[in-house]
Length: 228
Ligand code: AP5
Ligand code: MG
Image (cartoon, rainbow, N blue to C red; front, top):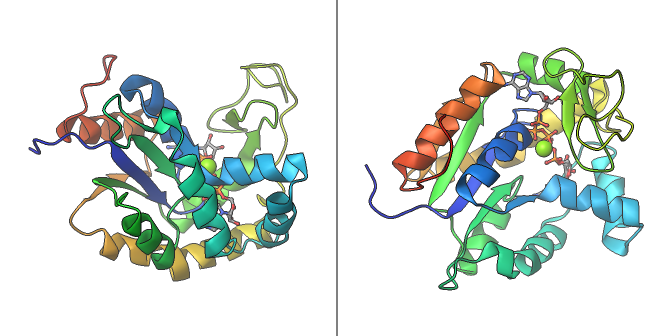
């Protein structure tokens, strides 16, 4: 049992491991701000900003966006008031950052090394099935799955009524490249974060994965609301 409450929390996992799905269940319950670098980049692409135009060339081929771009993006974002406790100390749930050892170094250099890393472990076969069936809502970011989390009305977002789309990097060849990038560049973080890492078996139904993640956050001092 840890005594200090973990408020600098990072989600690590392969593409499609369920980081966004778990984050959705944790943020309200524990009052954390969800920072998904993938969502931030897709918003930049949609806005046609300089960062978005550059990022798109990497994302479309399943490669990682350069470290300097990502570090700047997150350094600026974590300064915002919604990433701070009332005493000014940091409070966030990072999803998809850091994704390389240099990104982890940059976070540590800013005094923001995580006090808890949740590693959602899922085998590659499950990931491919999850990503090829995923449907997302570009309007509100909601995520569905044709098989595991189908919308009530075909092709329509349950939350905002927007039209669900198949993400442009969720096609077989790109999924394989994203998995390669994870193995080569992100998996080494599991060893780097050895002392603060907690592994969750992500190859179970979403509610069971969330329950396990909630238990980990509670063990690390977060009170949280709800019954899970
Ligand atoms: P990003 O958007 O972060 O993509 P990713 O890491 O590949 O992860 P995903 O968002 O695809 O999956 P997820 O783990 O969130 O799973 P989800 O919950 O949606 O990044 C995209 C790109 O941006 C990168 O490829 C890179 O180019 C760039 N980028 C981002 N950050 C970067 C960084 N730091 N450095 C450099 N480049 C960066 O679930 C997937 C599906 O499975 C859904 O349909 C869901 O309904 C379903 N599902 C979820 N959980 C379960 C379950 N337990 N059982 C069954 N189905 C489930
Ligand atoms: Mg995601």
